[in-house]
Length: 225
Image 1: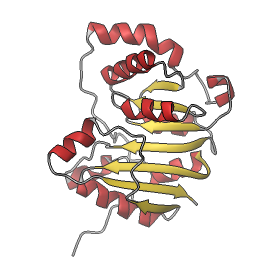
Image 2: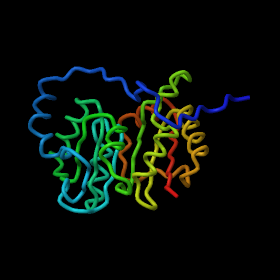
Image 3: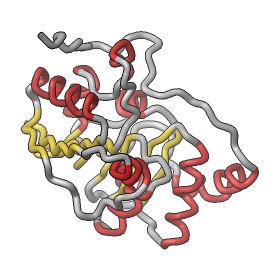
């Protein structure tokens, strides 16, 4: 019999979903200094009209990496503002340079953990969508508590989405896909459709690596009830 899933309904103190390990290059520091100020969120609560100068749909991407998906979505959906969140500074710097080179103006960056941002600065009923593409799977069972998808994070995401808003999850790790299915089923606050890959998302980075290694990508489209 498979072990029952652990359902963390409150965050565990001191448990993070990431491990910050990197060194900044001079190029990274230069990009952050010159490009981040124009694309960073203002301090305090996120008010789209003040942060972006308009009140269109707001999409939050958690763990945006080097930003290919965020930039592609923003280019395909010019009416939306995309907030790309990541702790990895070199990846954020690369995204900023790519967005600038592509002339995509509706991508914004937040360097840091998505959970405090969602908790403290994003108001309820603000986001049209939340994207979680190829997150750290923390494959060992004892590390499952570090996976982003938990009961408390699903509560938080659901509260920040507008009515009919969507959480999109993609992973090439079967154990993480099973974990997400279990957590979503236990939560019950989302209608889940599996297998719908968004056409706008480029198939590079972790997705391409997973496919090269023969892994299958699981796509979960979760609409808040």
